[in-house]
Amino acid sequence: MLLEEHTFQFLKELERFDYTLSSIDHVWNILFKNHKEKWSYFIITKYQKTFYIGHINGDYGTLEVEPEKSLKVMDSGGFSNSRSFYENEYLIEKWDHIIASARKWLKVVEKNWIKANKLVYEEYPLNFRYGTVSNSLIQESLPGIYRLDKELGKVRTRKLIRLVEDGFFSRKENTEAESMTAAKYFEYCKIAYISVFEKNNKFNKSLSGEEMYRIFADGRHEGILDIDPDSEQEFADWIDGKHPKRFGGGHPWEIMRGGNTTHIDLYVRRPSYYQKDGFVVELRGESIGRMVETMKMLLAIYDASLPITIANPENVRKRLLCQDNIGIVPEYSSLHRANQHFESGEDVFDVMYYDDIGRYKRRITPFIRWEALPILRLRDI
Image: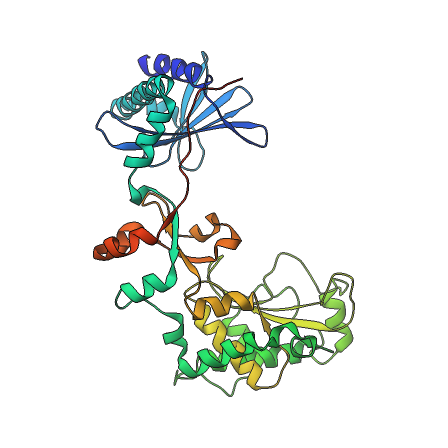
């Protein structure tokens, strides 16, 4: 098949070019124009003697290639469907065109790699790139955009900012409980639930904390519902993994159900791995959709004069004051977990597509810090 011949030759030519390492795998990132003058993006990984050609901004799947031996196409789940692939003349034609375009680009780079890469930097579409921009610019420019401070309200926002700035969460007496039982934990839960459902007339505030936990929590409680609710010793043994009713694989702290990144946790843990006295109680719900609920819970527990902390309080303050950054994500990427692409020091908690900026692109684009695009050149060694 002609596609196999083109692909084998392409990979032979590719090995003359510089690559990066991922563990021991060789990785090439290639940005080039296809036969329709549209920009394409290949990530090619060589594992031992096998190459994987992924068309990142296309829907062609991934080619698995053993040079001079075989070519298979992998679907998004990583499974081979080569039989249907070889029967799909349209898909074969697509790959043949894109491989031919990539081969042409290698020749352009070989001739003058600096000029070629300059062209990429000048013409590669902004809506295909990663970048960061100050959240304050986004909030000021886009009308009606969701704002944590407005959802939380001015009084609560100021109160929480003050707690962070006064160092509340850095003091042991504010964040650590000397003792804990399951019953005390469910008291925390009740306060948290009431703060979230305060305006819900159908919410039954007369229920116990344990009853509320059974309704709203994940359900995989790892035995916390089975221990003596008033025993400090049983709770301590359960926390330390020594209680016979503690079993693994659960989500006991997930007090508000959600997805992998869209739930709320109310953790109880030891202050350190080596410390076997005292308990830290910590809220965590950092997704944009659960952050306001989490902050309401925090302030309600604080008002009840119970020890409490929240994950990354300095970041909470940044988000309330719009001192964080918004991540710009390529249009071909999913927004789900896309903030994890960015380094922790970039203060990116929420993301959006470049095109979502809409008619405010002219105002905001000069402030966007774009990630460097890959440089392709011949190997020196």
